[in-house]
Every structure is written in structure tokens, then in C-alpha cells.
Length: 299
Image (cartoon, rainbow, N blue to C red; front, top):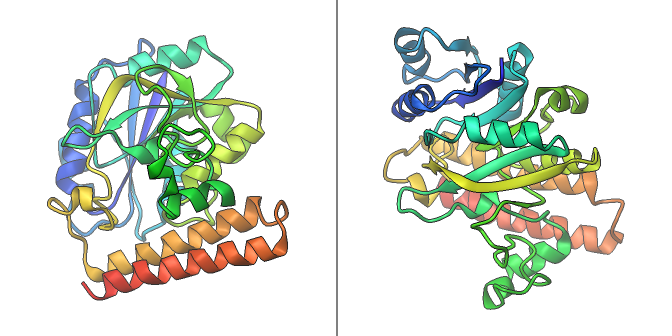
């Protein structure tokens, strides 16, 4: 078995249907494909749809919402493929989006993870799938808006790295968990996704550990995948017209997104920077988080 695709599902029945249809319509790797759906206690009939319409898929139906990391680990635990693809349910893959990246990874064993060009329905590139690490330096220039004034400066645009050539294959520090392909052996070696994170931040954490293990992460823009972004969380304007989760879900995800930033910083950066800077960063995270949470409490 060449590839195991792990799709975490939470109340995105129609999008999940479209995603699975595109997976089975894509060109499979020579050694075969398996699709594993981990449903996080959806209430919209997602699990029943998978069982009835895609009996060839492996379905893991959880009785509770495990969060993204834990659900991914549930899926990878039963995967048989040489490579794993962690894929969001709000994506639609192109015909070449499976076999071609698998071939690239097999030919480049120094690559620990790979992503493709993710695009929104309007054709714009998803910037969160091509990033630098959120160091205090990168975060300062990004959140103050200075990076947008100097988009071609590597020093000032380290957060989204917009100065790079997006038409060519190249290494990148951080990719998103919406499409992350990696060797199953490396997933086992690193212990999988950190389940401290419930939603958001877990992909940055995983990328950090992949780099620490001595592997490259590759941005492979030669194939595209459509991404409706944020359909489960309800926090993204890109999917507001197709998915609007209840306020309770949106507020919880907003809280978790703030906690994820704190967890990541304290895990990897707290000992690398002066205490005063750490205090300022954590204060900034909490203030920004308060604004985000209040926005969803009031709408």
C-alpha cells in the first residue's frame, strides 16, 4: 500500500462527500490507496453518509469530538500506507494530487513532509500553507502590518514568505495540516500529532519537530487542491457562505486557537528568549485572543 489518506470530519457532510469523491476520482499511486475517515462525533449525518456511500473507506466514528490532533492519530494508527496524507474534509483534490507527490517523496528521502498549492474557490492561494515559524520577530512584522509594506523583503516578510517563487518546488518552514503528506515511518518516529492541541497550532508544532529531526518540508505547487478553509471552525471568511457552525462551536475554536499559540510558544520559544519578551508576547497573544473570542460571542 503506497498511500493512506486520513480525513478528519466534523459536521461538513456535503464537503466531505465532495472530498471523498475527488479522492476516488484521482489517479491512485501505483501501489494502491486507502482512505480513512475519522468522524469527530458529527451531528449532521457525516458518518452515516460515509458508511452508506463509500463502503470502501475505513470509517472511525468517535462518540466525542477528539480534536484534530487526536483524530489524526486515531487514523494513522490503523493506516497501512508507506506514506500518509493528512487532508481536511473541506478540500477537493485534483487528479494528480496523490500519485505525483508520492512519486516525489519516494525519490527524495530527505523530505519529511510535503504540501501542494492550496487555492480558495476564487483562485487565490491559501497563504497559511506556506509560512515561516511564528518567532517574535516574524510575528511582530506580520501583526503590525509592516510585512505588507515590504512584501519582497526576506527580513520583514518571514511570516508568510511572500517573496518566494510560488511556481517552483522549494523548501518551506511551515505547511498546513489541511494537506500534509509524510512517510508513515516518520510519523511513528515522532510520535504523531501532539494532542495537547485541540484545534489550530498542531501543524506548526509538527513542522517544528520534523525540522528538528533533520528533514526538509517541501512546497510542491505543480498540482493544486481546492480548499474551502474553515468550514468546521466557522472562523474563516473564506467559507462563511457555505458553512456557519453554531456560536458555541465558533467560540470554543476561537479559545483553542489562542491556547494553541500559547502552547507552541511556551513549548519551543520560552527558553530561547528573555523573560520580558516572553511576557510581552504572551500578553499580545491573550489580547488578540480576547478580541477574537468576543467577536464570535457577539455574532
